[in-house]
Image 1: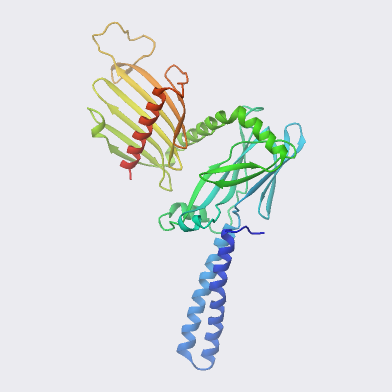
Image 2: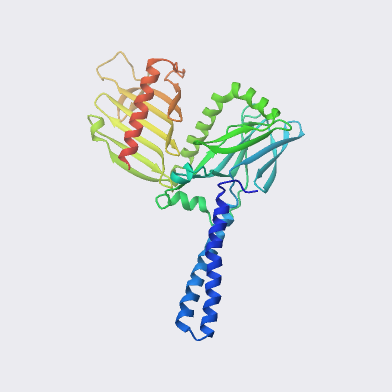
Amino acid sequence: MLLPGDISIWTRILILLFAIPGAVLFFLGIEWVLRRKVLKGSIGGLVGLLLLGIAALMIPVLTNLDTYHPLIEVSFKKTYVESYEVEIRLGKRCEHLDSWGDSLQISARILKWHGLPARMGFKSFCRPESSKTSCFQSYPKMMERSVFSREQGLDIWVFIKNHDKWIPWMGAVYGSTRCMPAINGAIYHVSFTGDELSVRPVNDTARKALDEITAKTSPLLDLSNIRDEYQSIIRTLRQFRTKSINLYDYSPRGGQAKAFVDTSGDIRRLEVELDSDLDKKIEAYYYRNGSLIFAHFVFHRYIDPENTSEKPNETGVLSINGRRVRSEMNRYYFKKGKMILWVNNEGREVDINSAKFAETEKEVLNFSDKLILKFK
C-alpha cells in the first residue's frame, strides 16, 4: 500500500494525465482526417502523440522511483552462532541476505523534499545501497555487501544530484544509519528524518538491544563513521576535480587553498597552506553533504639556526626546505556542526567542557565556512 506523499503515486497520476488526453486526441485526429478535416486532424494527432511521448518518457522515471520508499524495514532471524538471515523490506519489495557479526549498518540513497512539498508533509524516500556488518564487537574489520544495487529505469537520484538548481523542490543526498544490533527476532524501521537516516525499534527485542548498545558505543560509532568517510575521500582524491585560490590576507607570506570537488559539485576536501617567517601551517578539511566532519592541522615552527639549544637530531625536530622545524599535529572531529572530539599533539583528548575546546571549535568552523565561501 502506498503511503501518503509517496512520490510514485504522483508520477502515476501525471502519466495518466498525459496519456489519456494524448490517446483521445490521437484517435480523434485519425477520425478527423478520415472525415477530410485534415488540418484539424493533423494538429489533434500531433498534440496527442506529443502527450503520449511525454507519458512514455515518464515511465522509466516511475520505474526508478518504485525502488524508493519512505520506510525501510529490517528484521533479523538467527541461523547460526553470530550468523543471521536479514530481511530488508522496501514497500512490496523484499531482499534477504546473510549477515555475520553482531550488527548491521545500512547506507542509502535519499530523495528529500524542499519548500512547499516539505511543508505539506510529503515524506522523503530511501533506497538501500549497501550494508556493513560487524560494527563493534566480534570482528575488527567490516564486511560490505551490496543491497538493491541494480539500477532500474532512469537514475533519477543522479539526475537530481547533478541538476539540483533545476529542481529546487527536491534534493538527492546519501546517508548511513547507526548500527542496528543483530538480535534474533529484532525488527527496525529506517527512515529519513531531519538530516539523517534514523533507526526506530519496532518491537521490545529491538528496543532493548538498541538501548543497551547506544549507551556503550554511540561515541565510538560516530568516530568510526567519520574515519571511514575521510579515509574514503583520501582513497578517491584522483577522481575529484580541483580548484585552487590564493590566500593573501591570512599570512605574511601568503598561502594557498585547494578544493577537491565531486561530480555533484560538493567540496569533499580542502587543503590549506599558510607560510610566514616563523611558521608553516598545513590544514586539511573533510566534508560530507556540505558539513565539516574532520579537520587535520599540522603546525611547523621554524627553529632559529642560531638557537643551539635544539639539535637537529632531537625528537620532534624535522627539516622542511632546508630549515629545521618543530611540528605539532591536532585532529578535530565534527558532527552536525559541533566538535565532538579533539586529539592534541600528545595523542590525548582535550576536555570537551574546557574553554579552550569551545574556542578552538569556533575558530575551526569559522575558518572552514570562510574557505567554502571563497570557492563559491
